[in-house]
Image 1: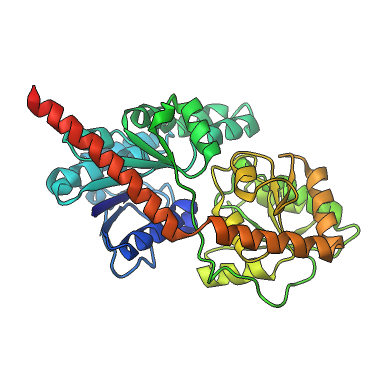
Image 2: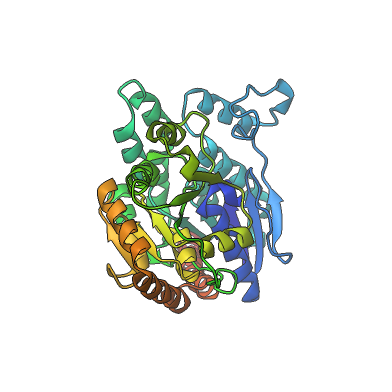
Length: 418
C-alpha cells in the first residue's frame, strides 16, 4: 500500500503527534508498505530511513528564538502564506488550515501516487478538496481540541477570554471537516466518544486504534532514585494540570524529601513558572526538555512515581511509556486515562482531576510503600506488554485504511454511473 501521512507539525517536542508520526510510519514500513510523510514545521527527526520526508514549509510563526515575528516581504511565496499571516494577525491558530491547503495543492499533482492519504489531526478545509478529487482519506483525531478550549477558557481571566476564544477559532473548522470524512481513527474509546459528542460525528465513522510503545527501550532499570517524581507536559497549559501537582509537591515537602522532574517547555513568565516561585519550591523542581527517547526512558525508569495530573487526555502516551518502565503511575480520573491504565489500583492509582490534596495523598502512599510501588510497577509493565505495541497499531491502522479505500472506490463508481 502506498501511504501519504500528513502532519501539520511533527517534531517530537511538539507532543504526542510527533511521536505518533515517527512510530506509526516505522510500523507501516515494517509491514511492507511505502510511506511518505508530508510535514509542516517543525519537521520530524529520526524517521525510519525507509520513510520519505517531504517538507511543507510555512511562515513558521512559532520558531525559536523569534516566535510571532513580522515576516519579511520576500518570505511570502503564495496565497497560503498570505492567509497564514492574515489569520495569525486575528489571533487565531492558522497552521491546521494553511497546512491542509498546502497539502491539497501537493495532492493535486501527486495524489494519484497514493492508495490512501492519512491526515494527523489538521482537519483543515484542504482535506475536503482532496476528497472531492476522489482520493481515499482517513484522519486521526487524538482528541477533540474543543476540550482544550473549554479548560483554557475556564482558566482565563475575563480580560483574556476573548483572545483565548479567538485562538481556538479553528475548532469549528475541524468539526465541520471531521463530519465529512468517512473513517476517523481515535486513539481511545473515550476520545472517540468525546469526538462524537463535541464534533457531532456519527459513531459509525469511528475506529479506535490505541497508541503503542517500544517496550525494549522503555523498560525497568535496576536502580531508582528515592523521592523522584516525574511528570510530562507537552504544553504549558492548564489542561495538563501541572499547577495542581506543584501544589501537591509543596504539601509533601513538609514531610518527605521529594523532587519533581518536569519534562516540558515552559513559557517564560507563564503560569507554571509563576506557581513554582509562589510556592517556594524552585529547588525541588527540575525542568528539562528536548530529551531523546533513550534519555526519556532512563528518566522514567529512574523515578519512584510518575504523575499524570491532566484535566483531560485523549490517550497519554507518556503514561504507557512509564508503565512499560515499571514505574508506578498516579493519574487523573479524566478523559482516556482510566481506559489507558485500567481499573483503579490494578496498574495505577486514580485521583479526581484538579484535586491537589488527593494527588498529594496518593503520592504519599506510594513513597511510603515499596510493596505498593512494586506491585503497581509490575502490573503496569505487563499491561504495556499485553496491550500496546506499534506493530499492532500499524496493522489496525492499515485495516482502517482498507475501509477508507473501499468508501472512496464506491463513491467514484457512483459518480461514474451518473
